[in-house]
Length: 162
Image (cartoon, rainbow, N blue to C red):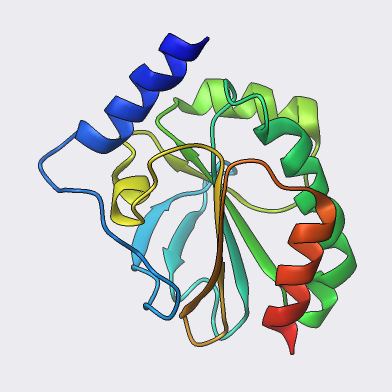
């Protein structure tokens, strides 16, 4: 398992010619365009349109991703009527794999595809899960690398909604 994690980490950081970004708090979140799992298009920042956004990078092999995606869904359900948006961006897997995993989880927020991990590289993702909390102006206000629980997601979401 450790080898698989290291191999995926290398793939995330070494694929393609563009180096991983060093995205810090206070930086503008990089723009991207990709396909949603439901077949629609997702363009950021246009798709968020002035709403706070949680951007979650994940993969089905990540042992922390499944419980955390359910925790994020609980936070999303509580706050979506207040304008909170969530994009769960799968890093490096094909549509069929992503579809099977999401069907099993039953999460209600949008799932985006990043089969070549180009968005993940643009965001400087070096491990999964990684979550960015972006304010309504498109500025990164929080970042969680690795395991977190529902209380952490709730705290960050409430800070974005202020």
